[in-house]
Image (tube, rainbow, N blue to C red; front, side, top):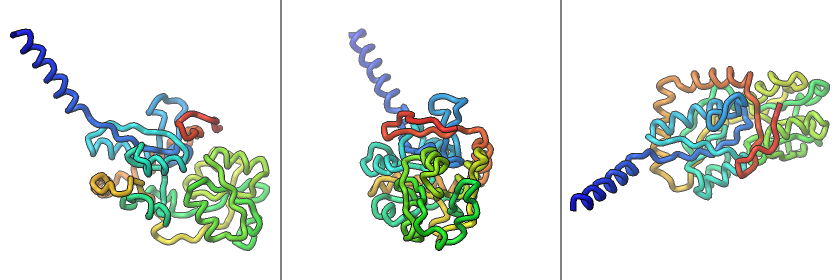
Length: 275
């Protein structure tokens, strides 16, 4: 009898411990987008992912009382994973777009420094003076990351240009430097990080026209997941009031000077390494 009671108490203890174990917040991220999310090759495991959105993900997980698991994949795959429910949400430098508004629950906007306040074109030094206006860009080959705001902007504002999709930004830079592209469409913060690391690159004088809704970032959640969306929005408000955005962006800019961007395929495997 005593032995049976001991076994029962042990089983109850195991069950209670299991109930108090934090759940995991799975966050999809495309870590090829300094200073928002990228890889520090000097670190290992989950610690190798750094940047503004990583700091934000850590803050959300802590606020929700959950363990954080960052799941690296391409930008397109991030969005598909949220829609399919294989991750809880995606934080990857997302801006508002019509199809995202229809497909997902969108968080309230958050301001990541000046990263997305301007959307620009990057080219090589030898072509730096060639793309000042939309007229100059007719028939040009503009590299755009698949499923990105930049892809939408090129189609909307540069109808004469040829939008050439690529999966990750390292691949886009390689195509530009090989002469297969004339320019890359990028958020200015990302452009500045790339130019800082590569003296062959420079910004053109062209900027896309942006409405206010396009100047901030937001988080993608599964359509109908209103409870998690409300919790995330409450934490975003707290982070803004505490001044964390400015702190995280300054830290991300500093880290971007030593970070290494690495391309992940849709299964989270390293496909190619950047420089």
